[in-house]
Image 1 (cartoon, rainbow, N blue to C red):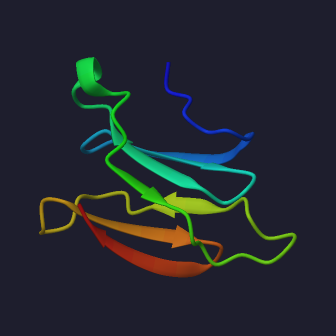
Image 2 (cartoon, rainbow, N blue to C red; image 1 turned 60 degrees about the vertical axis):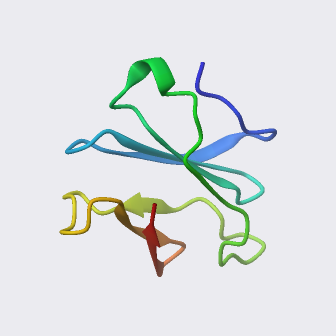
Length: 87
């Protein structure tokens, strides 16, 4: 089961090219995992706890659709602010 959040999930995204999966709960915690290896799909690769949000602004998360040049690079758009992660 892929549910490690303590609170309700309000947004999620999957990058089809490599199976990266993001989920964000109502508190703004973002969990990133890979679905490529289903045996290890429950392993969280990265957690983001400090996202830019206002009181009513917590439910928008998008990931770049294509894998960038760097193997572990993820570009996220969280509440209209861009973040670049290198896993």
